[in-house]
Image (cartoon, rainbow, N blue to C red; front, side, top):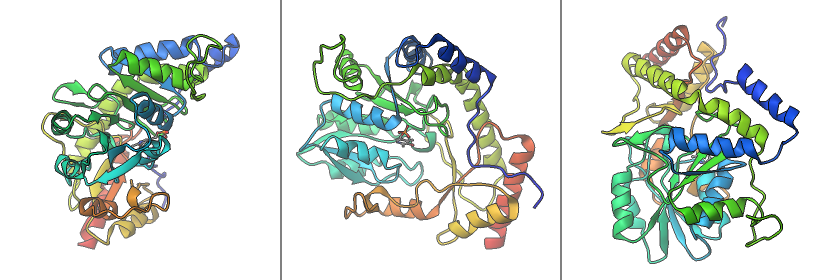
Length: 364
Ligand SMILES: *Cc1c(COP(=O)(O)O)cnc(C)c1O
């Protein structure tokens, strides 16, 4: 095995990010300050059509504070997918509310509006879909359901910077939405999260909650956290924000190549009117074959891949909730995410297609 390893993900940090961090270090203004304010302003313009953007120290903090700012708390139920990263349901549980798990659509792996409708109870306060892998959830149907049942609609957009549905950007549908800035996401600040909202009041509460309940120094209005982003992280994020559009085009081009050249595995489907930003390029491998397939991809072809996510949230030891989610269970057993990141070159993409097709043929 002589060829270089192709990793499943690769954060891209260049000279500009390093220079931006150095400038903050030289300034001595390390904590939340003018870099964070500029990052919020620019993120709002580039990705949110001018909506409020409030920066925090992680995506998980963003979900947690967003839920609190929207008034979610003990006694409430929030409907979430089980097929997602644990932070989605964790953030609901951390408010004292109960996450209620609903099944997903088999084509796009996002919440199924019919399953959500069936999960509504008198205690349901909100629906929080995840735009999983960078594909927008079915916001038209979920929005109609939320309006009909007087529920709030939130968005876990951790993986979906720049995705859209019907020409409308994700992050502009919900009462609030969260974008993660973790290193493997489509853009990074090192660690960090950005919360968007169209509500002046939610934006104000988010800013209070992230900073000990203070708008004016030492006049704390409520009990809050220290969930502030630092100027160092914001400086990285600002540089990456200028690059994420180009990276997204590269991800989409890489995905188009794989769509056209893979055979024998189920390739990703895109809903009508959706712009998928391919945080992951996720294929389906026949039942029982997936783990062997991933191991062979690594051992025989030196190509990394990932399973997002092998254990649905409702079955994690941290939740362990009985739920009948057949589409979620099938996805957890069959999905495999192949490299699609913008650092891949034509030879890498060719190697991936050749390897996947050979393994699919051998398994058939
Ligand atoms: C990454 C991620 C989060 C959490 O973001 P962090 O920045 O890692 O805290 C939440 N939800 C989903 C779907 C994610 O992928």
